[in-house]
Image (cartoon, rainbow, N blue to C red; front, top):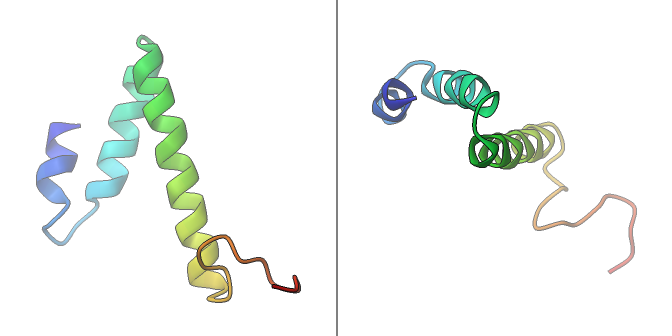
Length: 65
């Protein structure tokens, strides 16, 4: 996981390395499992935002303001 933190500002798979490290640690530590769940949620939200720019700040497409 430390390697992933170092790789974040550099070109490369820093986020993937952190997620792999959290996955391994989550088997043993509940706090790592919670961190992994938050990270997965953040990655999911960002990937949905990349696919549909209308999803921003919780706005859902098709909903009236």
